Amino acid sequence: MKKKMRIVLLMLLAIPMLFGCQNKQSQSSDTTSADANVQEAYRIFLLELYEQDPTKNTNTFLIRDLDGNGVEELIYRHQALEVTFYTYDNGIKKIDYHDFQTGTTRLFVSDNPAYPGFFEFHIGGGLEYYNYITIENAALNFKKLWDDDFSDSYEGRDKIVEYTTDKQMIAESKKLYQENKDVEFIPLESIAEN
Image 1 (spheres, one colour):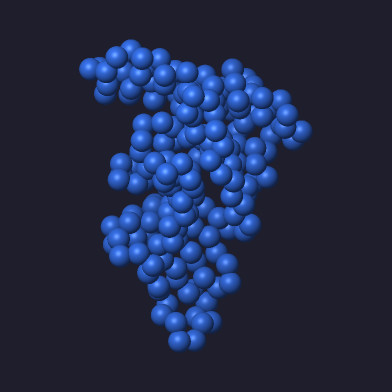
Image 2 (cartoon, one colour):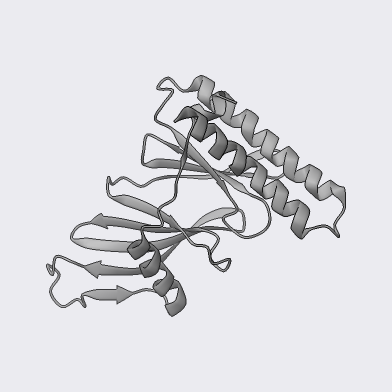
């Protein structure tokens, strides 16, 4: 299992560099070097977090470009429901922190490049909530998509309420939920094994 995690981590760290080399051949080697610098900075940062982590086995992370700008963000999940978002701009910078505060929270990722962020699902008060999380103007942005009153306990309210006119985004959130395309976070302990 540990060997598998090492392989997954190495692939995660290597894939952006490989795609960068294939898709940006016309750009200078400075871009590839910058991508490698970001990856190395995140690796060192995660190793420091691991060394400070008293549990050594409950925290996880993911590296993903959440806003489609070509710079990958580091998403660090600690205490199971608390997530801190970082980016790289001449060094690692904290974007924001969010505590999902409910045990029934799921994050989904889409293969559609139009949606680089996370689709989020959670339950509370008899409602299922569907949101989209991305980075806009260097800040964490939660976009409320729609919710479903599965309990039928809200009189005078439609069962399904849509908060966006973006029908494609709503359809994508439904598809990801149905397909169980949950984010697969990587255990923090795997960073120490490399």
